[in-house]
Length: 154
Image (tube, helix red, strand yellow):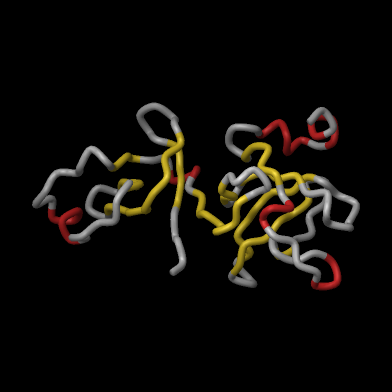
């Protein structure tokens, strides 16, 4: 079964949390729940209070899990910055993104704006998650997006 998880930064302290994403329409609030909800209507009509396992999050930092893990066993999330030396396009550093047109996750070199499927290299060769290494994300490591000078220091 597919594992559909999200992560985002908490509103109260800025820490990353992961779990199940819920939008509360009645209060225009976004949450990550650590456990799946049994009663989704309970949120909208406020018959129960939120549990200690939910966190209000900043929706601008919301990222979905790609279902891949890097060479260190770390989950690869949308908006992560990864290093891959197996691709033959001449680039090493990529941003993980959702490719709306293809309805899949992909990577885009930080130096050039062309997108690739995350699991394929040139000539349809397989690139698995273990061929990547997560080195940061666009929210905590925005300096990595500014070009070569910071990426060569890694």
